[in-house]
Image (spheres, one colour):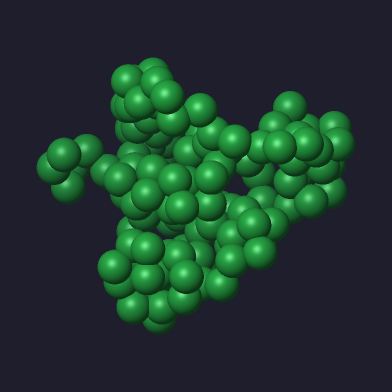
Length: 132
């Protein structure tokens, strides 16, 4: 995927996704270093993602989700703080054995592509509204 395909991610979304990386990592009782090692990057590089200081790609979301055994859609769509505050009320409740369904990677890829497109559309709408 070309760099322009990631233009749908705004700084705010990077911050939200980064916070979700951190939240889900802590829920899984993993250290930032463990995630970084899995990704093949330095811990300092990974923590920049958690702080929303580096651009987060769909590929990165999928890899972190795989390591943390979380549905990638949860990482993208969950509002930071919502997981903790609404643990039992969340449609993505963590009660019981939570496992992402990686059996159907095609479905996950299609959904991630749809989310990318939606984010790009949101960014385009934002630019149109700002230009008025």
